[in-house]
Amino acid sequence: MSKPQLLIDTDPGVDDALAIMMAHAHADIAALSVAAGNVGLDHTVRNARTLRELLGASFPVFPGCASPLVRAPEEDAAFVHGADGLGDVGFPEPKAAAEGEAAALALLRLTRERPGELTLVALAPLTNLALALKLDPALPRRVKRLVVMGGAVTGHGNTGRVPAEFNVGFDPEAAHVVFEAFPAFDLVDWEATLRHAFDDTEFEGWIASGDHRAKFFQKVFRTARDYNATHERNGVLAADALGMAVAIDPDIIVRSETRAVGVELDGRLTRGATVVDWARRLGRPAQARIVLEVDQLRFQAMVRKALGAA
Ligand code: BDR
Ligand code: CA
Image (cartoon, helix red, strand yellow):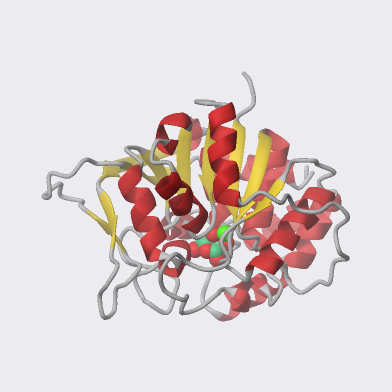
């Protein structure tokens, strides 16, 4: 079977880092397009270049939007990922530069060059994708699949806006544009992430038996691990890694529900919430396959291989 060809929109980010390692181990990476999100764009672009160097890879890195489409973000996620987005380890400046072409333009060009071939994997606020869609609404017809890590389908979010998940809450307008434009996509939400945590001790074992990628991840994961330990988050949570597992191999899905999903753009308490028409009351096309459960052992095997672990 030929390897999946991935276009990854990302804001690295500790769990983005693990997801990119998985993509490199199990698929072909056509490009990384980079957004601001977990931390500012200067950091996320540099982190993408750092990951490329770690992996000895040569895929292009395209810098994208430095801020959301409409409103300034209320919060970033530096308190989880570190001020530089990769655990404040202090990695040296990576050698190869980013591309000059803007991420949204690169997404359009690459999907024109390879129509129907590329799976778009969105691991960040959806700003770059929304901008690309506004420039060319035919984009969905040219991608093989879209997988979005984002949302919290029953309101158990992870931001200061209680029901909102970070990627959607950071740029709700962008998520709205993307959710309205794609007739079908896979949605891997924060609540699925909570159900697919790795056991701490098992994860330690993978790190101990892994190669240079495991050593790298051990370093960058420290701030996120400390945050989780003090905030009642059990086990090792890796939202983007779960999204990437679904992108690499959709057969990993064991339970899903397909429903219409919208994004709340206003709301005193709920801006950025993902609203699911669970009871199919609105008669709107059900565009989101909501991933509720994946095969945990296969997911773990994918992560272990990405870390070079036994
Ligand atoms: C998502 O938000 C970011 O902090 C993570 O990288 C992930 O993409 C989880 O809500
Ligand atoms: Ca991310």
